[in-house]
Length: 483
Ligand SMILES: Cc1ncc(COP(=O)(O)O)c(C=O)c1O
Picture 1 (cartoon, rainbow, N blue to C red):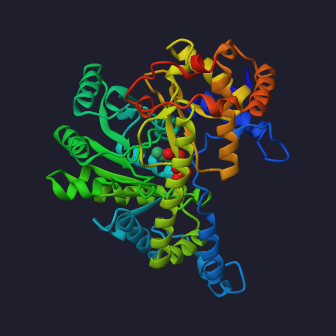
Picture 2: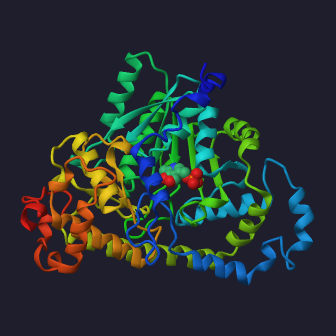
Picture 3: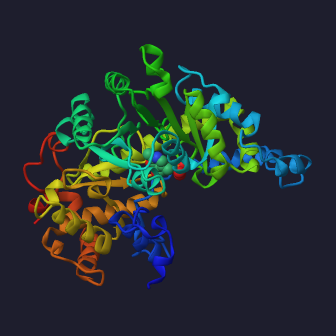
């Protein structure tokens, strides 16, 4: 008997999803992380959707408000009360501050009731919690694809719920349509699957796009007509760096008739405030029974009272929050422009987006063959030889090979420059190294160094704007031209 057989089915199944290229790339980075001086040939982490561009603003606030951290001389008077606090409702001032913040990041167009704020361990915990409240093992949720890979783990692993992808395509910029939803729903019904709801990430991970008003209304009418739930994961609500502005499902249900008991929002401070380590996740439900049950379940994923206290104080500082959100968005915009312009210069376009911490990069023209094998071959070159941890579209359940998600906000400007340099050299070098490279292959690296010193690409391969649009296929691969 192997030791695994002594454990539960959940413990021994593959529902954690860690045996995938998405996580392989992370492992590769962990084993050989890039450092500008100590390890300049290491792997650059571009698979991590973290917002590290505005940390200084938060650390400044913490220095100016030392009493908010209770484990120091300025705050210690509060230590006993806060360290003893363990009510699963959460600190009143924390829920009030979160509700106010959620309204602010949605442009003040909606208000949130602190009594509906339920805590979870990050959006990860919040997403699982809402599944436990809404669905039984074997029930299904529709999820527009491509979608955030960890949904496979968060929504299904421990709950036994299943995901039914609703495939979206580049022909309409991967927008989900009511027709696609109806077709996926009807197919599931025909197969005897009980569909309990639809979950969306808006803004989207991995697309970096937001849903427009009409689409949101379509989604709400779709779920309302079928009496199923809508979960809107709005974790990137304030991670918007150019127009148009974000529209929350909370705004939509003010404008149309629908059964609010079916509407639930998942939120977190991991992206908008850049605080993933604090594990602050929120379920905001318009359904009283879900709020009550969710609150009881939140015992399994409470936010530490020290974190609640600190954040209650920080988020109540309206002036700070306003400045932080504006500055964070400005810095993200600058970084996004810098990165996408660098890619455009080598003929690489991205889906047009204005949100998130990543771009959805179109490398279809670099595939040796337009298949998922071709995508994996290209990905192996990028991770093992170019040494950039980007995530292949297949790990987001994308139906079209050749798309990759590339994160751009978890590093400093110099590291982005280093990544762009490698991409330039790689595109310049050509396709031949895609032939089943191995981890130990050094061929490309030698060429990379040559390419860096020659810098021949910078002079040669600028594409005209029409060739850079994600909507128009690039007539000649820059690889061909470079050769
Ligand atoms: C759409 C989406 N939902 C949930 C999460 C998980 O967030 P958290 O760190 O708050 O658990 C992420 C993180 O990347 C995400 O992109």
